[in-house]
Image (cartoon, rainbow, N blue to C red):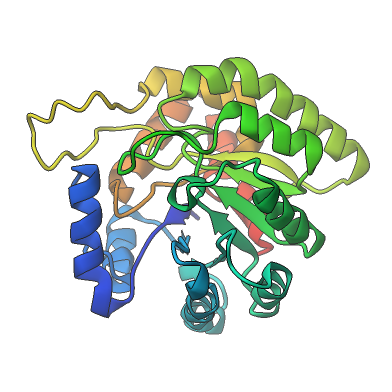
Length: 307
């Protein structure tokens, strides 16, 4: 089984315009048409069984409607017995009114967790409003996944930095936190050197209190390896993905039980990711590569999603 823990789609009526806007701001090319149907077709080609959809709430007044839509997406998935298809989590904005009630509704809708994107909010990850969201989510048993590092379609400043992550871990102590883009897009050396020791200590301390493989800090692999699909082949933007070799080193540093397979579809090709991650892990871990891939491809995700 393969679970893609980080994908994005849009309702059919806005998918084309939304994708065009995002392509222009990031100067990159999408690999699907941005619809649920397009993602399912990509999954079929790649051999991906389940794609987790992460809604990004950019308007504080849209949280309820977006979460309700996410729950409708999941109705078909749940009816199929959670074996194959699309599964959405919820979202929120730090300026959404009645945050605690909204998060309770996320829980009641069966949406397992929430996606945060500090850069779209223009709010630091360790802002008191964000800390409150993360704290309440943990109390409700919801996991939190956050964009980390730069966003290719937005200008600095970076709102989810290594320092802000460390501060949240020390102050809030979230039960389950997923850091997208291998902990910080375009900031991977600092993630390895500064964040990895903190995360290892955090996870070890937490595992001593709660024997549950779904708890602690995880990294997802979304939009971190492979080639960036630029709209203009001669683009001068000085952005790049990490090398395959460095990706293997990061997986080793954090542990294969802490890495979630993810693509950021439509911004990366799922088939390329499945093949590339498989090759890198087998080359890096040799005889234990199969077990490592089982963790990364689906077991870690299954423990968080309770499938």
